[in-house]
Image 1 (cartoon, rainbow, N blue to C red):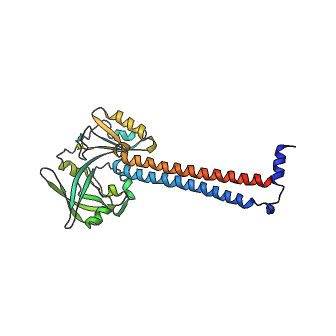
Image 2: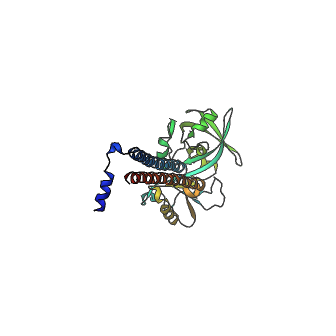
Image 3: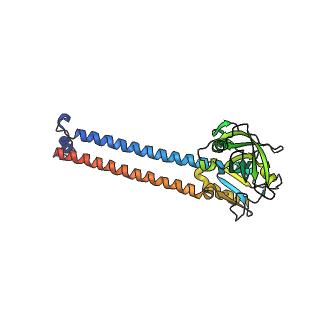
Length: 299
């Protein structure tokens, strides 16, 4: 007798109404479907979470930073000349989305009742506002021009709530140096990214103030920020930038600047692997159990 015919005959020899395996098969199908759904949801949640965290870190630090060679880990780097062979021509390179100047300066915001240590991130007229466009919860961004300075500034919601400030308010920022200096700024916008570690530190202002506070010329900046088109190609683009800028400058990718964050994000993949393995085991056990029930029923 044909083997396939024999097996099919044995399986269909009893009517569905007489089969005690029918509920078990249904339970197995439902459990396998739920397992697949859990796997899809787990992968989607972790992938989306990692993407959101990466985007927010990149929003404050860009994909790649070009700075002077300096063994000092201070936020206030040695200045470099703005006129470089790669600036702004690097905008036209394959894989590069944008290049912009920046300069950071540590300071203290003082109001009548509170004080808060912050980092003033100075940006120029070439600053890409795309990241902050949907993060501004009150007010608006400001315009930076090369020919004139602006006292407008963007602060985070965390800082605004702690210092009881709102859009349109003025405040004094003190800078600890020799001699000590201060600057008056006007709040034009309040942002919220959800990354408390960055929100409680960064305020965005005109790079002119950092240059004047550091006694730099208008042609001196702390460095350049490079944004790439595809994050998956970050390592390749980081190598390209390093080879392009020359021996007297240094470049670091965002993964090198914040290794603790990206190493932690890698660990999230382990959670997905564990869930996938457990779901595959459960689905496998369900299928084996169902097959055993069918075999026992037909023998």
